[in-house]
Length: 403
Image (cartoon, rainbow, N blue to C red):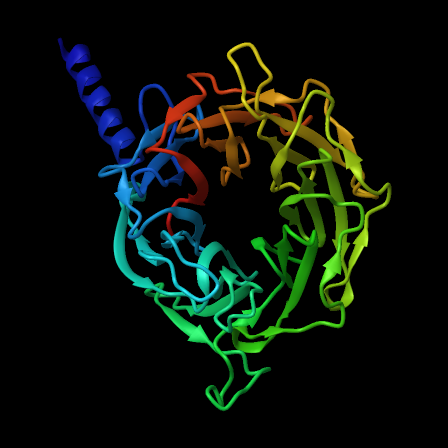
């Protein structure tokens, strides 16, 4: 009786400890949080990420309202305390703001719970993307149309308060007008911008119509500085769909040609093709739409959104490549591509470098994969690899435990 009593006490003590640490009998601790946008119901699905299995469990109160209409981009401030959601809204054109668009600020609480704080507006029309600088202090929001009515795109810059996450507009002191003697409140980029990437001390905007990159260097106080490079045409590209990378190396996917354009970022944000040049995607894939360099910098993963997939194929997939440590050249990984859900949109890696997650637009799900750190190969999670999101899944973001 005494031993059984002691056993019951020990079991109860362990159970209490496990709950306190976010553990379950089937897994390990919570190693991070993930949030997936869903534009059908204008919601954000929040998850806790299990360390041992990679399984996703919805956070309390999830899904949360996106604070607007048609959420398309989501970013997490350094230390994971604040999340920003870009709502594109409806309607809008080169001279008219979309209805219910804006930047929604959330604080992150226990178990990844999001609490809405307030909404901000970018200066241009139809916001499409958001990106922090390397310090996590300045947030840049990309608009399809500049407020000057010229038809080009623009970037609105904000400083982000470390304690509250609140945004303060940064003016472009490089361009002053009678109406804006201190500087205009935006930075123009190229035509039809779709996304941005911070790399090599630069903010690079991808132009999908002219197949070009518009570079800015990070200046003082969040001001973007023009460079001698100007807009850079990507020779041979026919329909660029994404830009991503790690350090000074960037990789652009080209949908129509099913190729990858590797570049390095140099002085004045100039782009130089990496050794070996353009890389063909893996045989059997098509329409690359997104890419991700893992946190170790050893592997490149390319997301392929196959048109009109069927139960028997072709399938949407992830192509996997090793990155040569000396030359940064790509080499296809045997066993890839790996199947994901229908019409994948975005891809993230968890904070502990164990798992990759993909948001799938058509079936409203998230696909999880295990990363083999030695080979870069991907495999299914041990307890199921597909998780439901809210509505039509769009982009997603991830954070470690909140500091």
